[in-house]
Every structure is written in C-alpha cells, then in structure tokens.
Length: 199
Length: 199
Ligand SMILES: [Zn+2]
Ligand SMILES: [Zn+2]
Image 1 (cartoon, each protein chain N blue to C red):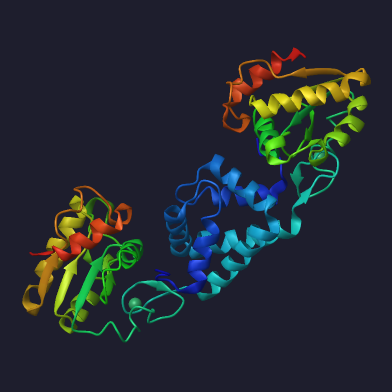
Image 2 (image 1 turned 90 degrees about the vertical axis):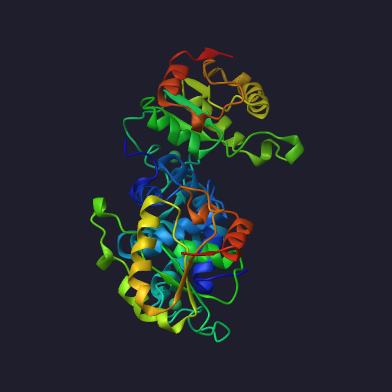
C-alpha cells in the first residue's frame, strides 16, 4: 500500500531506494533519519544537493567528475605531463587510486569496458581521446578491472597504442581475479601499481 | 586524503555517509550514481528533499510523521475512535504495521523506550499524552519491541493505564525475542496482532 507519510515523503523514499546499496526498507530508514534530524541532516543535505546539481562537471580532458573542467587533477601543476597516465573504467576507480595515494599521476576515464553482448563498442568509450593523449606521457598504465571485459578492453587498447611508441603496462597481479578495484583496500592497490608489469 | 571531486562533492559524500545503512564507501558510490544520473535522479532527489524540508510535520495527535497535522491516519474518518489504539516506539514501527495492513486502527508513537541508563524517563516519552487519549479507545495494544527496555516500558504504561478501565493488550508472542518490529515480515506482524493477549 502507498502508505503513511504523504506523497512528498513517499516520493523521497522511492528516489532514495534507487541509490546503490539502499533497498526500499533501508531507504525508508534513511528518510526517517533525515526527517528526525531535519536541521542537522536533511536541510544540509538538501542544500549540498542543490549546490552539487549546479556545480558538478565532467572533466573534458580525463572524464573525472569535479566542480571544474579541466578537473583539479588535470589542472594540478605538480602532475606534469610526461609521467604516468593511469587508464580506469570508471570515476570510482580513479577516486580509489587517489585514496590509495598512488602519487602525482594523471588519469583517463574510459567510461566502461568493451562488451559486445551489451552493445558497447570502442566508439562508446573514451578510447580515441586516450590515443590522442597517450604521446604526452612516458607510460600508460591500464588499471582496468580483472574481469573478462576489462582484460578484453586492455588488449584492444594495447593494440591501438602499439604504433605510438609509448610504454603500456598493466597493474600487477595482486588484483584478485574477478575483483573490482573500488572494493580493494588501499595497500593492495598501491602494491599492485608498484609491481606493474609490461604487457 | 580529502580527495577528488571538489568540496561540494566531498561534502555531499560526508552527509550521505551519515544515513543509516550507508558507510563512507557506499556513500561515495551513491553520490557517483547521483552524478551520473544527474537529470534522472540527482535533480529529482534534490527537488524532493526541498519539498520534504518544507512539508514534513510531526502529528500533534499521535506523533506520526506526515505532511499535515493531524496526520492522514488521525484525520481518516474510517478510523473511528472507540476502536484499537496501537502504541509503538517509533514512526518506523507505525509504518511497518500500516504496510502489514493491520486494519482501521489508530496509533500512538512513544518516541522511544524507558532507559534509565541512557537517561530516558517517562517525561521524555509521549506517555502523558497516551494516558489522556486512552479513554477514547476500547483497547490499547502495546506494540513495543520485544527487548528488555520495550517490555519495561510496556509494564510502566500498563500501570499508568490501570485505573482507566481500558483494556490493555500486547502483541502475541511470535515477535522474536530481541527482534525489532521494523525488520519483521508482514505476515508475522499480522499474526502477532490477531493473536494479541491481555496483559
Ligand atoms: Zn581531468
Ligand atoms: Zn496522527
């Protein structure tokens, strides 16, 4: 039944339930918590969402999400070109590597992986842009997930970069097979980057 | 490190991480999902929160949360006085009973349970208001959680209502000992109400 609380509250619950990690039950708990802590939590969250809606940008250089484009990482003068370019599937992987403190590197967000069954081809990913950026760096590290699609994507990119003369590496094994970067602890990520191997 | 994404995004993650069921990691995933689905999810959620901040009220009669006071349940003419008044600890329990479709009852939200160790006494709960409402009903059902504090609170309320001549019952056993109403399936809740016993 489309229950207690009135349509405004019901709609809020339904929207919250669409967030990853929240089902209908936990969304109701979250909304009740918001309402109980109206001044301390609901009002600030509402304001933060308003600000984020206005401010959020996709970086035109690397695909990171930030409040400016080029993003803070691309604009950081300490991250000079000529160093490492780390290629990731998703912004969450970029954030995970940054939390791991992997150093003054730059990134390239593919926006997914090749997946013929899902109709995702090279033209759906940011691969042409990667090929254009590659010559500015000494090394391209393919930090894609250790899944079948991730490895297929890595091989495709390696082929595309073959003529560029740029060194292409991948993360060391240490990333669990089938695992997703975003769920790894920071030590494992750091070690996997240090022990990266030529492809 | 106070990472990628800019201060607006970082603040949004920190606020989301304070919701029950979301930690820092799932809050980051939720915020990324919001940003990726900006028009389909972030903008509507922002608008829904704005509306809820303005609209949400605590019902002055029963303590339910709604967009009006008296709430939709208290104002529902099909829920005549003279019937059952179900006493719950929290609004989430009221919502759980409504989802279970327990019928045309009314509710009273205590706002917690007696807990001397946490400094929660009778004056911190909506007990005086319950005693005032009780004579309008044929039966008071104490639907508190099957915890020590819940049962202590039920005994205290039973004593307070002893002189009123109103029948006081509790939910049938069937509620698992130590369990919380909000986590029960709807069939169990319905059965427990049907088999309620006199205290
Ligand atoms: Zn960038
Ligand atoms: Zn009410």
